[in-house]
Length: 80
Image (cartoon, rainbow, N blue to C red):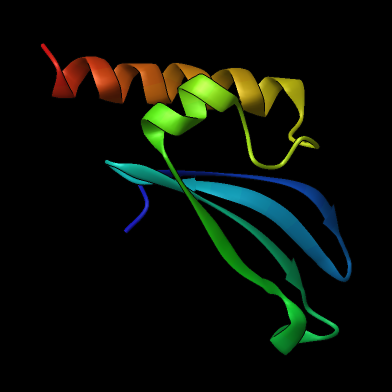
């Protein structure tokens, strides 16, 4: 189960988002008009995220900063 989730580009036909887990992120996109064509998700490790940035460059700035804070918090808890 995801610890937290952010969604953007919410529209009648779908949305984009990222789910935070204790050791990785899953970037996803959903298209409700063509459910089998929806993006199943792209995994990214927390360290890779900190080094390379977000997989989805369309993430809104507010969500990006919240995600960055959450990832830094998780990493600090895992490496006291």
